[in-house]
Length: 141
Image 1 (cartoon, one colour):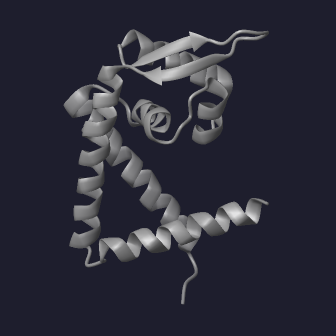
Image 2 (cartoon, helix red, strand yellow):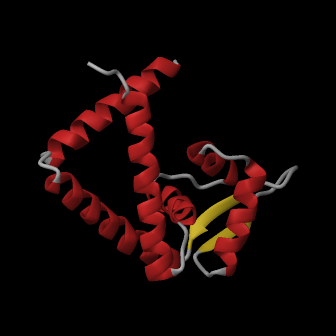
Protein backbone atom coordinates (compact mmCIF):
# COMPACT_ATOMS: atom_id res chain seq x y z
CA UNK A 1 0.00 0.00 0.00
CA UNK A 2 1.35 3.42 -0.96
CA UNK A 3 1.28 5.94 1.87
CA UNK A 4 0.60 9.31 0.30
CA UNK A 5 -2.17 10.80 2.42
CA UNK A 6 -0.29 14.07 2.98
CA UNK A 7 0.14 14.71 -0.74
CA UNK A 8 -3.41 13.61 -1.50
CA UNK A 9 -4.86 15.93 1.14
CA UNK A 10 -2.73 18.79 -0.12
CA UNK A 11 -3.88 18.20 -3.71
CA UNK A 12 -7.53 17.98 -2.63
CA UNK A 13 -7.37 21.15 -0.54
CA UNK A 14 -5.55 23.04 -3.26
CA UNK A 15 -8.04 22.00 -5.93
CA UNK A 16 -11.03 22.80 -3.73
CA UNK A 17 -9.59 26.24 -2.95
CA UNK A 18 -8.97 26.94 -6.65
CA UNK A 19 -12.48 25.76 -7.57
CA UNK A 20 -14.07 27.96 -4.90
CA UNK A 21 -11.93 30.89 -6.05
CA UNK A 22 -12.98 30.41 -9.68
CA UNK A 23 -16.66 30.24 -8.73
CA UNK A 24 -16.52 33.35 -6.55
CA UNK A 25 -14.45 35.38 -9.01
CA UNK A 26 -16.71 34.46 -11.94
CA UNK A 27 -20.03 34.89 -10.19
CA UNK A 28 -19.29 37.73 -7.73
CA UNK A 29 -15.86 39.21 -8.50
CA UNK A 30 -14.64 38.12 -5.05
CA UNK A 31 -11.57 36.01 -4.31
CA UNK A 32 -11.88 32.97 -2.07
CA UNK A 33 -9.27 34.44 0.29
CA UNK A 34 -11.40 37.55 0.77
CA UNK A 35 -14.54 35.47 1.18
CA UNK A 36 -12.79 33.42 3.87
CA UNK A 37 -11.88 36.63 5.69
CA UNK A 38 -15.52 37.77 5.60
CA UNK A 39 -16.65 34.31 6.70
CA UNK A 40 -14.20 34.21 9.62
CA UNK A 41 -15.41 37.62 10.78
CA UNK A 42 -19.11 36.87 10.34
CA UNK A 43 -19.33 33.25 11.42
CA UNK A 44 -16.19 32.38 13.35
CA UNK A 45 -15.90 35.43 15.61
CA UNK A 46 -12.62 36.81 14.25
CA UNK A 47 -13.54 40.38 15.19
CA UNK A 48 -10.08 41.98 15.30
CA UNK A 49 -7.30 42.13 12.74
CA UNK A 50 -5.07 40.08 15.04
CA UNK A 51 -7.71 37.34 15.47
CA UNK A 52 -8.38 37.26 11.74
CA UNK A 53 -4.66 36.98 10.94
CA UNK A 54 -4.39 34.05 13.35
CA UNK A 55 -7.42 32.29 11.85
CA UNK A 56 -6.22 32.75 8.28
CA UNK A 57 -2.58 31.99 9.07
CA UNK A 58 -1.33 35.24 7.55
CA UNK A 59 0.44 38.34 8.85
CA UNK A 60 -1.36 41.25 10.48
CA UNK A 61 -0.16 43.68 7.76
CA UNK A 62 -1.68 41.34 5.16
CA UNK A 63 -5.00 41.39 7.03
CA UNK A 64 -4.79 45.16 7.32
CA UNK A 65 -4.49 45.48 3.53
CA UNK A 66 -7.30 42.98 2.98
CA UNK A 67 -9.54 44.77 5.49
CA UNK A 68 -8.97 48.04 3.64
CA UNK A 69 -10.03 46.44 0.32
CA UNK A 70 -13.09 44.78 1.89
CA UNK A 71 -14.10 48.08 3.50
CA UNK A 72 -13.74 49.90 0.17
CA UNK A 73 -16.00 47.25 -1.40
CA UNK A 74 -18.62 48.01 1.27
CA UNK A 75 -18.48 44.60 2.95
CA UNK A 76 -16.57 45.46 6.12
CA UNK A 77 -16.31 48.16 8.74
CA UNK A 78 -13.06 48.72 10.59
CA UNK A 79 -13.29 50.51 13.91
CA UNK A 80 -10.10 51.83 15.52
CA UNK A 81 -9.67 50.55 19.05
CA UNK A 82 -8.48 52.95 21.73
CA UNK A 83 -4.91 52.64 22.96
CA UNK A 84 -1.53 52.24 21.40
CA UNK A 85 -0.92 50.69 18.02
CA UNK A 86 -2.92 50.15 14.92
CA UNK A 87 -5.62 47.88 16.36
CA UNK A 88 -9.01 47.61 14.71
CA UNK A 89 -12.26 45.84 15.45
CA UNK A 90 -13.85 44.25 12.38
CA UNK A 91 -17.56 44.09 11.66
CA UNK A 92 -19.44 43.03 8.55
CA UNK A 93 -21.73 45.52 6.89
CA UNK A 94 -25.19 44.32 5.82
CA UNK A 95 -23.68 43.74 2.37
CA UNK A 96 -20.85 41.67 3.86
CA UNK A 97 -23.33 39.64 5.89
CA UNK A 98 -25.32 38.94 2.71
CA UNK A 99 -22.17 37.77 0.90
CA UNK A 100 -21.29 35.38 3.75
CA UNK A 101 -24.82 33.99 3.98
CA UNK A 102 -25.23 33.53 0.23
CA UNK A 103 -21.83 32.12 -0.61
CA UNK A 104 -21.36 30.19 2.63
CA UNK A 105 -24.52 28.26 1.86
CA UNK A 106 -23.90 27.94 -1.88
CA UNK A 107 -20.32 26.70 -1.57
CA UNK A 108 -21.38 24.25 1.15
CA UNK A 109 -24.13 22.85 -1.10
CA UNK A 110 -21.73 22.47 -4.01
CA UNK A 111 -19.17 20.67 -1.83
CA UNK A 112 -21.86 18.42 -0.35
CA UNK A 113 -22.98 17.49 -3.88
CA UNK A 114 -19.38 16.75 -4.87
CA UNK A 115 -18.85 14.51 -1.83
CA UNK A 116 -22.11 12.64 -2.47
CA UNK A 117 -21.28 12.27 -6.20
CA UNK A 118 -18.05 10.52 -5.16
CA UNK A 119 -20.13 7.95 -3.29
CA UNK A 120 -19.17 9.24 0.16
CA UNK A 121 -21.93 9.98 2.65
CA UNK A 122 -21.65 13.69 3.48
CA UNK A 123 -22.23 13.29 7.22
CA UNK A 124 -19.57 10.58 7.47
CA UNK A 125 -17.03 12.69 5.58
CA UNK A 126 -17.80 15.72 7.76
CA UNK A 127 -17.42 13.74 10.99
CA UNK A 128 -14.10 12.22 9.92
CA UNK A 129 -12.77 15.60 8.78
CA UNK A 130 -13.72 17.17 12.12
CA UNK A 131 -11.99 14.34 13.97
CA UNK A 132 -8.80 14.97 12.01
CA UNK A 133 -8.96 18.69 12.76
CA UNK A 134 -9.51 17.97 16.46
CA UNK A 135 -6.53 15.61 16.50
CA UNK A 136 -4.38 18.30 14.90
CA UNK A 137 -5.49 20.89 17.43
CA UNK A 138 -4.85 18.54 20.34
CA UNK A 139 -1.41 17.77 18.91
CA UNK A 140 -0.49 21.47 19.11
CA UNK A 141 -1.05 21.61 22.85
